[in-house]
Image 1 (tube, rainbow, N blue to C red):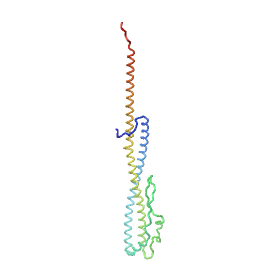
Image 2: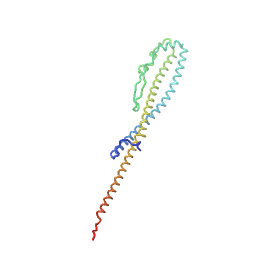
Image 3: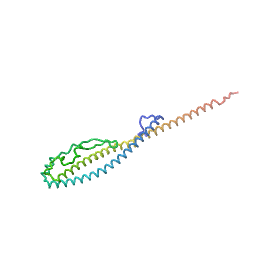
Image 4: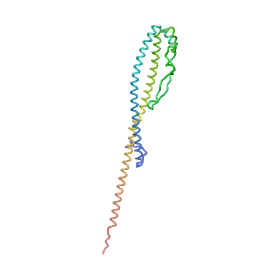
Length: 228
């Protein structure tokens, strides 16, 4: 019992009332955290399905883009295609910001909107002279592929943060469920036991005092017979 009892607690009725209030608060906190954990698990499951779908889409898009790249290399020439790639615009700067999902701060990967909203040929960074439609198609496919990868990175970062929050919330739920609440309950049982024991001792003491008083009363009531 000693390991399940909070040290330094006095076995009084006032302390028992305080512990009962603490137990009620701990149980409410556990229920709230359990609801949060259930919601996090559902959200993570949804993200896992979405990530799997996006990963499959990215693999397909990469395969198509590579096939278009091979066709463009054959039609345009690999040396000329390499020169075109060198003259095209570089990958825009990537920004990592944060947002909140279900009270959890998660990363969000993005790039400047002006870097990728305009997909016209003039903004691809290479001249229209001496290039074919295959080169344009390759540029478009890799532009879309980059957007998909950034979106996937955001979702993956969100899923990773949710896992961390799930683990932290689960530890708090387990601590309340298996440590805090049992110790409160054990301490309350200990106080109730001590109070009952004290009441039994008081009852025994009162009975004993009553017996002593009755015995004294009987002794004083016995008449004294004098000799003739």
